[in-house]
Length: 229
Image 1 (tube, rainbow, N blue to C red):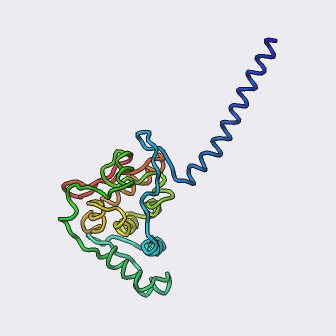
Image 2 (image 1 turned 180 degrees about the vertical axis):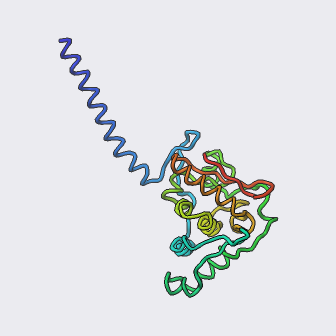
Image 3 (image 1 turned 45 degrees about the vertical axis):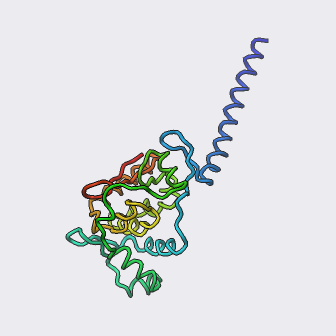
C-alpha cells in the first residue's frame, strides 16, 4: 500500500509538470499575441496603447527601407544620407509626399529649443497611466513595444547605426507627445549624435534583457535622457 501511494504521488507530480508545460506553451503565446506583459513593478500593463496612424506608418516603412543609407555629417550636427531624391523615388518607390516627409521632418526638422526643455504632462488616458505604472514619467517603450509594437522600428534601426536610429526616432516624434515628442521632432540638431549612440545601445540591451526603455525630458543638454527599466 505504501509503495502504491508513493507511485500515485509521483504520478501526480509528473502530470502536474506536464500540465504546467502545456499551460506555458498555450498561455505565453496568447499573452504575446494580445501584447500583455508585466511591468517592472509587477503590475499588468497592456501594450499597444500608443498607435501609429496609417500615413505615418507608410512614411516610416519607406524610411525603414533605406536605413543603411543614413549618416551623420562630419561635424555630427546634421543627419544626411547617401541617396538622392531620384534614387529614393526610382529605386525605393518614394512618392513626392514621402520624400517631403523625409526631407522636412527627418533630415531638416525645425528646432525649437524652448519647446523641448524641462518637464511637462504627457498625453492623458491609458498611455499616461501605463507609463506611470512602469515608473516612467516620460515615454516608456516596453519589451513588447520594441519587438512587436509601435517602437519596433527603433529596435531595428538601433541594429543598423546611430544615424538610422536618429531617422526612425525623429520620424516617430509625433506619437510620443509632450516634451519628449518636441525634442524628438528636432532630431539630431538638438539631441546630438552621442544621444542616439547611447539610446541605441540601451534599446538593444533592454531587448536582450526582455526589459523596456524609459525616455524622459530634462534640463540641460541633451534635453532627453534614457534608461533601461
